[in-house]
Image (cartoon, rainbow, N blue to C red; front, side, top):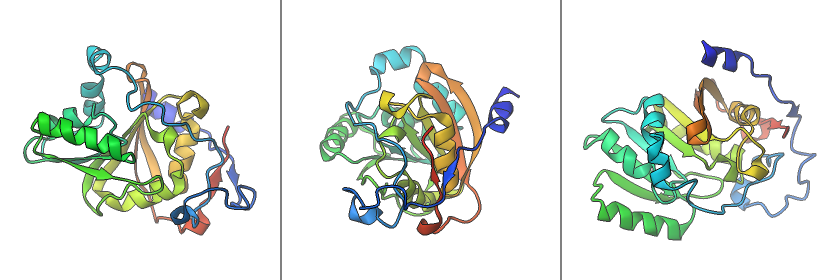
Length: 240
């Protein structure tokens, strides 16, 4: 009941009518993102590949609880976006089992290299790795039952392009799982109303919210909803 009340109580953030009022000269944006509006918010710098120590996170049963809430089951194909040092990757692998697959993605080549060493060392044969981009997760179409984005959404430079290009990667019934803190982006979180607004702007719907203070904030689940808008039709969410 509390979950339903929280979702129902969301007040939509104001939308800007277009992108003319933002970055009129295009700024220093990557060329492949210029068809999409820039976000009306800052971007948190990537200061570390770790949100906390793995031991501390395991003491509060973070990964198991989050995977339970996301209904991750054997045989699923799951993407771990912004995988970093692989905290979720190495725990998702046994959860989906030998009949499932995990794709670990990050945008930093050195991080991918370190994670590849860990995957090899821990003999995780159902894990593969992918180098993504700031505006494109570069995931194969119609491939994933769950896409995890844990403590990284506030670091996405081009959220509209990124989420727009992510959507085709979901299978029927697929979900995007976001774990983040309900605080300003400058404090390495994402205000929850802003998160919902940005997802809705590119054709997703919020289906559940869970308070996950032991995991650093909240867990939100999204599914595709309706037609994916054309890039020019995306309405920009105003940063609260």
